[in-house]
Amino acid sequence: DAKTTQPNSMESNEEEPVHLPCNHSTISGTDYIHWYRQLPSQGPEYVIHGLTSNVNNRMASLAIAEDRKSSTLILHRATLRDAAVYYCILETGNTPLVFGKGTRLSVIA
Amino acid sequence: DTAVSQTPKYLVTQMGNDKSIKCEQNLGHDTMYWYKQDSKKFLKIMFSYNNKELIINETVPNRFSPKSPDKAHLNLHINSLELGDSAVYFCASSQDWVGVVFQFFGPGTRLTVL
Image 1 (cartoon, rainbow over the protein chains, first blue to last red):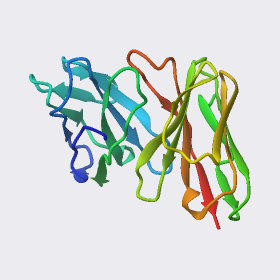
Image 2 (image 1 turned 90 degrees about the vertical axis):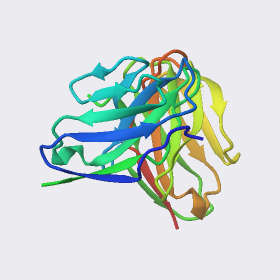
Image 3 (image 1 turned 60 degrees about the vertical axis):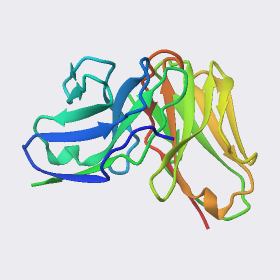
């Protein structure tokens, strides 16, 4: 039970921003929101995580709703190399990550 | 240097055979995992070891037996392989299994059972 809901797929033009949404209405106060992505024929890789505040790193930004029931992963300028399946995961701290179906992002040149 | 490595990358074998997949991490992590990704692309946890001790064993057939000779290695042995075992198997590691956990994944082993 992944506890998150994401669109099955999204499409973006190259060099445009991409907003990947995730709903997690049953999130508890101590759950962290993690984003991983899986490039074709590779293992998943960490992208970003947050608890309550918005977060930025070199790969992406994470915008977390005030009620924490949803979040958005933002890729500021999509490149062809960003085409992947993006997973939004709630991490409780003492269980392994539970991966849902994720969102398959296609980037069009 | 590869953080989490798996061997072999591809494994093709006949039904009924026994095979092993090896995993090594050079990150100094205490916790290691095995995940299975089936043809529908669902990634499911199978096992988790912390400091060589089994801490998570999901509903996996007894034919699957993980072995951790030391903290840096977690091997997966599969007996009497079945067609349904065909999948990509990912090894992963994390510093610990409590607190905020960041998992590092290996490149995967594609197992094909004929």
